[in-house]
Length: 636
Image (tube, rainbow, N blue to C red; front, side):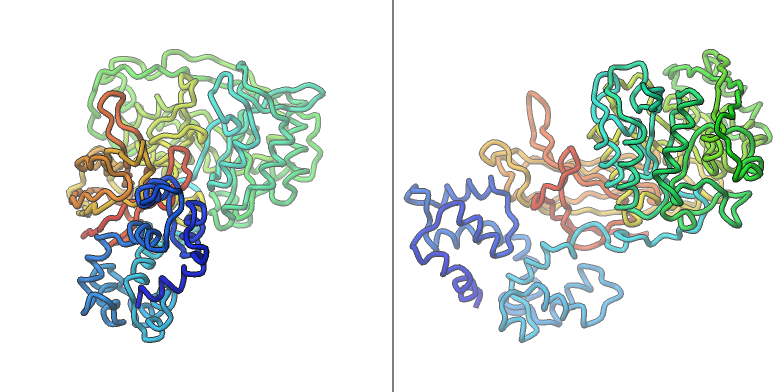
């Protein structure tokens, strides 16, 4: 039956006798077979018996079988087929319930799968499934590892902004390094397309009273501020309808700050939030309440109440000056000091910080300096719920910080506080939006591991989106959740008054035991002549006790269809914060392993059962059809 179907599909293409590689690729496409051109080229060459660059219909059939008839899929099919030729509808039902954990199952789902994926008409009409149809189903998006319930906005979006992790970028205008590279609008466009919701705009005085965007005191090129916000306006809500925060690094004179304010109002119009929302005069609104809104994050003069009293007044020409105490970070001392026991929530923070100083053996900050800052009232009044306030201490914030004030903390200081005062840090991020940004020494635009700051509830963990690597893989994986909306609801223990500490395993935690059976690889990115020595690393990122990785054995000289059949087990204490990363590599004995592809996603967004893991390049581009075939099982 399948032979008859296959010949019917391809015979017209062989009327001339033989076909070339180019026509073979087109015919595979016609048959809905995804394939890597380089792999097909080698398989074509191996099966071109006369070495003429042209193959017969039988030779093409051999190529087709090599690509599509994977032994691991045949084994599954034969397990549930009563005659090893056809799956009855009841067989498919049994497979879906037993292996794919389709709990909300009804018989019509199996019928829909048959109608959608079975290519042989008479088999379809009989409500059955051939191996050809079963393989197509197993290769489909319905069998991906990522749970499609996480592929749309499913979380409660009515919590205050503080309750969400927010996808955030650092120096968004840069597409290379921090010193010499170009500034480019593409930095903003690509970040927004990826669902980024907090963009950084570094603003400086430009010629002809036009503010410019670039990395000050460096040789990076310059963009006009108005051009940047026009691009943001065009792409802001393509990937997500939830609010975009413009984090201004404002170095402009008051006159050019006024130009910025006018440009923001003219470009964004009603989308620019320049007033408090009803019912949110004394508390932060939710992403739902702020849909399609642009928020300005900047320094601000006075209170929200004073801003509202000036509403409708012309603020042009009005300037306020205030003094700001700037604390210069002390770098990590490498002392390896352990975290002291918690002293309390906030009432003993002053004593705690003195204790931290004694434990670390150095002052928290090297020195302080006073700077005078002039702020245009026209720009100041556009800052509503995202006022920037210098972080001084958890105790100071508890006593004086207002609900609409947020902090920016450098990674070194944030890391120190994470290690030595994690509990206090979490209590702080429960109340106030906190942004963590890379240290100035990262001139190459490298990134830190964002996981350690998510672990204490930091909402805006800002990364250099232009730099590929593990940190950006984690960023992309984290925000796959909740429909790539750029907002992910924090776990309850980071929102409520709990005793959670990421450095200490909770006695009453609810761990998850995860088992991954790594079965095979599917058309992995080919190395030289398809002869890659392939291996896979499975790694968990989360709280410190959950950080672990396991590695498969090496399959020699096979990037096309390596088979591992290895099982890995992980016990994850805090699965709500955990990400899992799959990495395929080509073993290198001298220069180190060669990266082939990776995929990262939240542990709780995984489907169970037989699943396909799509692989992505270092730059985050899909490498389809390159993927891993695994079996996932977990209990909690």
